[in-house]
Length: 100
Image 1 (cartoon, rainbow, N blue to C red):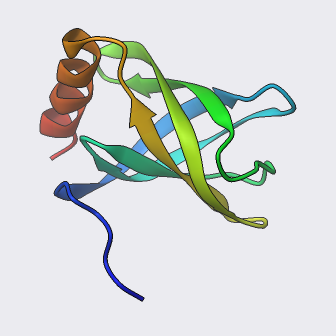
Image 2 (image 1 turned 135 degrees about the vertical axis):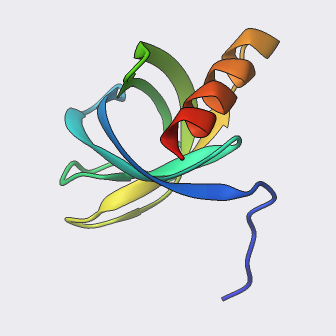
């Protein structure tokens, strides 16, 4: 499989709450970059679906939006972040720095 990631990623263990129009759940972010993440969860999502997620870190709760890239049944899904502002992108980068 060809590597499609364009941003450096870090291993993480951050709690997350997520919600789409059809489903919601809780899980754990295990892989994080400035462009997206992988969420370990049992919830079902559809590729392309818009998702809202609350990342819970030592700094508090940060809310992000993204699109589901793909899902793996009973394992989780990948998200590509959609940033509404530069401040949103900086918030992700701050969480990445603190995850090291």
